[in-house]
Image 1 (cartoon, rainbow, N blue to C red):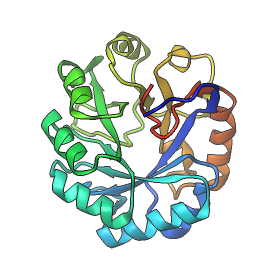
Image 2 (image 1 turned 180 degrees about the horizontal axis):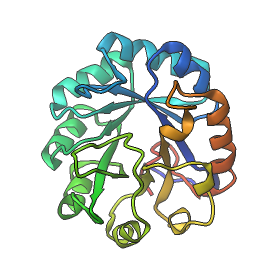
Image 3 (image 1 turned 135 degrees about the vertical axis):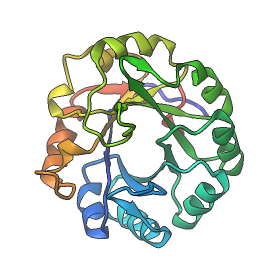
Length: 240
């Protein structure tokens, strides 16, 4: 994909919409809206029909694109759900193998594939496989925290600054950052100046007291993260 030059707003992804109304309400102020599918026992997990309904609500209500966020490893099932819902962005937010990424890339050559990598006890669990994920066809990494209890995704736990600093030089792809972030993190942090930084994935700070995604909170986040800019490519936000 060809790249453009010049500044673009940071990508703001908010995650975990569960109704068309909620998804539509935040789509005007986010770039990406995460929709859970295949997240076993997830509080915000959707059926295939719900995924399609919410994806359409996102597309028609604002500037955002829907993102299928999944723990699934079955590339055929993920691809089928993405096609049915007409979702182009897919976030693999579990411990899928590089082979699973390659199979999904083969099935969906035009998708934007975001592979989550997890920091646990100060180290990236997937560090030995970063190059393999890149070769398999991932477009972006999402750096997030995992917990000793095994929780991944929307944990509210931060990636320790020293662990992030050690990890970033090893990433062969641009990255999004997750893990307890808010508008207060939009400036003054080393990761924001990193050339591979493409934006943030936020859940807890986009809600009030754990409720639905809140348009007012998303507007605050949007203003904060749009105040800085980053180079983004033309068609494919992940390539550089």
